[in-house]
Each structure stands twice: as C-alpha cells, then as structure tokens.
Length: 398
Image 1: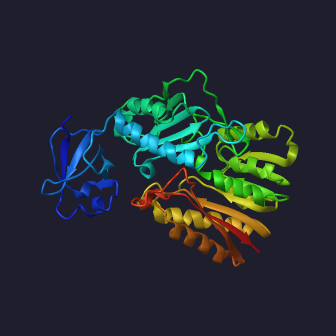
Image 2 (image 1 turned 135 degrees about the vertical axis):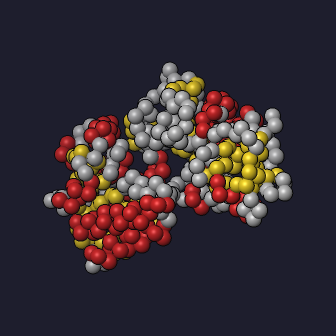
Image 3 (image 1 turned 180 degrees about the vertical axis):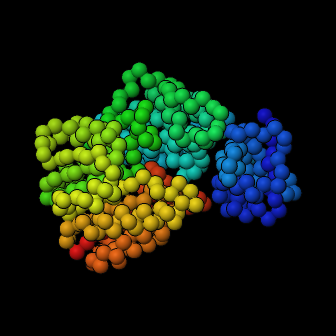
C-alpha cells in the first residue's frame, strides 16, 4: 500500500532524529491531499528524505510514530511489537498465570513499548485494550488477533474499552465489546495474593490502577498498628493492603459512591470479618480531610490528574500544595504520608516543589523516605520523557 506523505519544515527534524515519537502540527510544512485522522502516513524532511511512519491525528500532536524505518505496518508488525512487550513482562515474572499470587500486569504501555496510542492491561486470561488514537482504533481487530498470537496462549479473551480515551471529536464507533472470546472471562483478579473486582465496563482506565502495585506493597510494610486514611481511594487498593499489613484502622474516602461500593466489595472479598477496622465515606476529599476528627498516622494522597495539559499546570500545583498542606496539618507526629501525582504535564521537580511548599507552610520537620514512580511494566521510553507520569513521595512528619 502506498502511503500518503507529510512533509516537515526545514529545521524541524531534530526531535525525530533523537527518536521522539511525536510530531507536532507546527513542524508540518505540507501534506498530500485527502489524509484523514487515523491514516498511516509517511513522514519526510524538506528535501523528501524518509524519516518515519505513523498514525495521523487531529490536534497539537499531528503524528505518532510507529516506525523510524521503512516497513509495512501489518499483522507481522503488530505481532512483533506485542511479542517484544510480552517478552519483557515474562522477564519481570509478571506474565506467568498464577491465580494464587499475581495475574494482573500491563502488557502494552504506549510509547514505552513503541506502540504510541495503545494500552493493554491483562487480568487473568483477559486482555483489556484501550486505544488513545483513531489510528489504533482502526487497527483494533488486527491488534487483538496479534495479541493472542504474541502471548503464546497466555490470554484467550480481548476486551476493547476505548469509549473515554479516543479523541472527543472523533466520529467513530466507541462501543466497548469483546473482540475475541469473553464467555469465560472472570471479573476478579489477583495482585500479590489479594483479590480485586475489576469493573471493565464502567471503571476508570481499564478497570484498575495497576501502576500503583509496587507502591501498595510498600505501604503494606508501613501499616502495622497504624490508623490509616486513604484519600481518593477508588477501588480501595491501598486500603486492602493496609488491612493485610495489620493497620489498626482504615478509612477510605472518595467522592464517587460507586467507588465506595467497589472499595467495600474489595475489602469484603479479602477480609469478610473486618468489622469496624474499615469504614468508607463517599465525600469530597478536601472537605473530609480538612474537617477530619479522627487522628491518623498514615495518610495516602493519590488524587486523579490535576493537570490534563500544560495550560493547567499552575492551577494543578496549587491543588497539590493545598492538599498536602492539609495532610501535614492533620498527620500525627511520627506519621507517614504517601503522596502522589499522576499528571503527565507535571514533572517530578514541580511536584516535589509543591510538596516542599506545603511542608514549609506547616513548619514541621519532614523527611523523604522514598521517591516513587511507576513499575517496570509501565516502562518509559528514554527518548520520550513525557512517559514518566507517576510521581510519589513517602514522607515522615514529626
């Protein structure tokens, strides 16, 4: 198939020569007529020399690069890239089906696996696939078939869930459905020996925040005998780990009543006799924390992204400062705070400065015990630093 061509302005090729997978609209000098969103395009420099192949899209990011070499983007391409991603997860001992210990992992992490615009999470034997670009949406059935082949029998069902991730104005069928299998798919999964209900249909992302797996495990080791407050709890992952870690009390807070129901269900799934050790509240997190009468010596702050784009950074940093300032005010002496930002637009230096500002306002002595990030199955492409989206600090407060 002959691809249509996009030509870049003179002097606008340096980022591509450094293998950055995004081409911004401002770098484009011209394009063949008839290119539509989601089309595969060939990218050339001002002299007509080949640079890359990628998916075209509408917006500030005009092309997401799939290959920096001339090659067909066909079933062999998808199988090769997915097999490469699967091999990494096998080397991390995550892709081995083990119902007793762990059967949740991220198989594809967009640019980190050289598949920009595609996310695939595995729960048991089901892969939940999300397209963030129209190009990946167009290829969804071919990718689903390649998933089955590349994973060597590890998965048997592929569920497509992109209704909230595709570009808002894209005129495509957003219906969620099983592309392959589905009759025996289970809606519970296991992480580090703990079981969780996975809401593929209505849940955020693919149904669970796998990126906090290692950080939840770390929290468990700090929980024994502590009174824990889990803010923005969503599925209650941190709460379940805290309970297993021996917390004296765990309170879970989220503004969503559905999230609270899911948290209670996950707690009951693992600790049916938990009794009064756990209580969940469907309330605004800022208000709950500000007016909390209970004394806590371990607080988790894991809010949704405060900045979806660069224009929102300043306001987001104010939000992080305010949230952490309240936590510093409430935490008991000697207490521990796990604080996070998942805003891709906010870098780790900016986030740390926001937390520093909150600490300075409190006047309390604060130590950094750990600097946290996303786990190895959410790899960061060294040529795409924007992929390092999850930042976290574990703090001790005197």
